[in-house]
Length: 320
Ligand SMILES: [Zn+2]
Image (cartoon, rainbow, N blue to C red):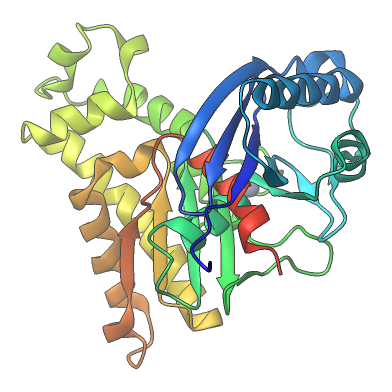
């Protein structure tokens, strides 16, 4: 009976939407719903919305749930389920989501930072499965990171570890939201990328991007840059190549510090695909210490859509 299918509820708490689903221990998403977060109404309302989402899922299914996993922004106290100051959640400070949800449903609850949950998702169901240690990075509006060491998330002393997006690669670089300068996020976050392409495009009247955006700079998006690069546009290709070298130089430093040589990359911007991955690999190879060089792997994340729900559910299956 070792192959018995188990079920968990995964909750992906985002700034505008809460996505919830029932996921099997083989990583299959059986049912999903989404509800509004209403973060602006404060933590009490957000938690009410999580609870009503879970109730809705339970009402629609007959599965026996092994637990509830919650991935959320902000710093999460390891093993305690306390979520501290998630960005864009006013009035929050410290909230013990784990305890509140457990008291309501009497089912084991596992809470972690969303980027850590994404890494656990890849470890349990995805590209990280066959590795003992790897670093996961999610390239979205922001840049999230999770460090897996010996099949466990490295949380640091207070749960704040893994913020790879806030490694500074240029101490005189652009100001980042976190207060520092030249952070990876200030180069690779999709907001920054859009802004930068809008500014630079004016110097590239020959770029195919102009046609793709109908001469309307507000239409610049990572997806459009990807299309132009696919059509052989030199400027679009240079944007992706440069992004790869920013990421690659941070990854090389991480390799040198941690001797972890596997990187799993998810999020919308990972859709740049091979050109991005090749540029990252090339940069790492040129900067990492020689003994590590042959072991470096840069892989796309396997969980694409619903990665948030699946990662959150993996917190239940993977806990130890
Ligand atoms: Zn930063």
